[in-house]
Image 1 (cartoon, helix red, strand yellow):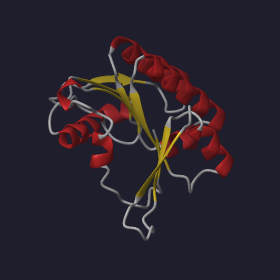
Image 2 (cartoon, helix red, strand yellow):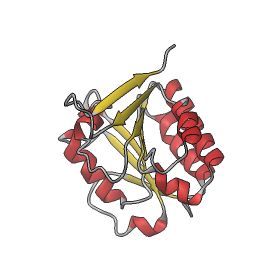
Image 3 (tube, rainbow, N blue to C red):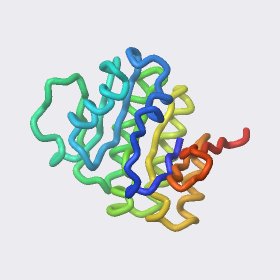
Length: 182
């Protein structure tokens, strides 16, 4: 799923994240986290799930790895956030090994600061295609106020569902879900 929400809106998305995982104890998580250390990413997911996942891997940059934590997350590094080909290769290694994995690409705006829209599209296309083959899910966060409408529309086409946050909705519901028609 593509999650559209402005970064300026602080949202507790624990409920949204839990919808990605049927059984937290058997969850296999693959994160592409270029804005926070792997241990923080892992700890946040453990808190959200209420337990440690069965398996977890994070793809990040060397400067974010810091000291290894006491958790069971596998950390893979790429030299730079712009190296999406290498990130894709590392991610698909886990996607082909694990059954029903969940991929989380957080803060796509970080990627847009160091890679062009075409490269980001190709990276996400590879990941979503691999996920469909392995019956997995994805959560990719995008701030639609930072990208042009054409880019947002193009990325929406990669996902089976688009979830949009709107703090100003008057009906009490903050989230809207649009599913792709088969």
